[in-house]
Length: 402
Image 1 (tube, rainbow, N blue to C red):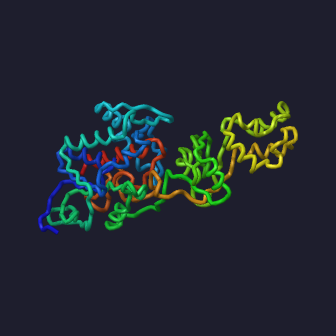
Image 2 (cartoon, one colour):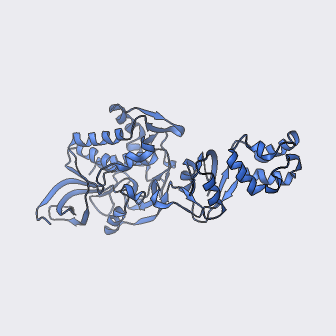
Image 3 (cartoon, rainbow, N blue to C red):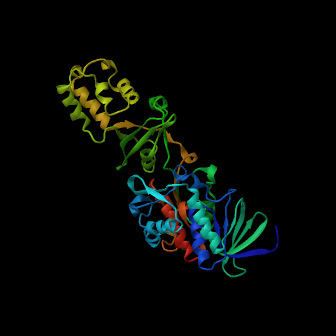
């Protein structure tokens, strides 16, 4: 370990979306800023997001799009740096974008453009970025005034303001880790319970084989769980259920909960089947359902719900049986055994308890000069650009004051 200490105004742990935004904002104020990234490159999660197109924000950003123990915490930062501010930044760089469903904004080209923009902002402002940084001991250091001393790759660094933008536990292959939580605990901050969010479901019962056989099939459904509902595409995979609607509802699902899946969200299936019995009594039920659902799925439902009447016309079904099938079409109850966990989760729910953080500056209330931004905090967004917007907004808010 070298005896000499390299001094910075601001050191940011994590070179993801929140860290880079914070770095550029602080450096534009004339602060000497260093970004420390554990991985060999910064912005890996940005590059893989949105299928490589980066769903960088959403036209409709509201506090209701976020999950947190304190639902009001995110409001201040989101208003200080809004989706319109980030859109203006992308337009200044000439990045072409497109709106998809539900106000989601994606790059027309590549996510590389978003990362290049952030790095361009950092470079222009003089930010220093070190990748492959292994962070050792961190201490609150009073020798040169209030600040923090860090041991990094056999170097000793000092800063007035330390910003934790380390992300969380999701997708460890892209750098997800618990270092931010360890730093929070070291300095006496509380954590809320963490779990994987925006993550596919798995099954261990009869549904596992059904999902394997239907792997690759997608259809629009409405899914309900714990008083929440989303309407989006459901995707069957060889492990279980994925697709946007599964990821969204996974934020609310708890182990042991059932999912209610409405396979025909625009149809009162019971009324439709009873009417069809009168008007199309000679038709087979599968033939009728094939007009609305994929044949493979209908075949699986037949094996589950009317196996003995597969070759029979509708007229031979009792009204009670059709009512039961209709109810299941509108509320198919399935119980996942688990989610795929942090390995494929897009976010980590929970994190640093925001009760100990200033909503205006992101500074720890009881630890001067220590800041937390982005996913490490107990703020998680729905699918659709909300988590990136939280990164931009929280990073900017801290960058104004560090």
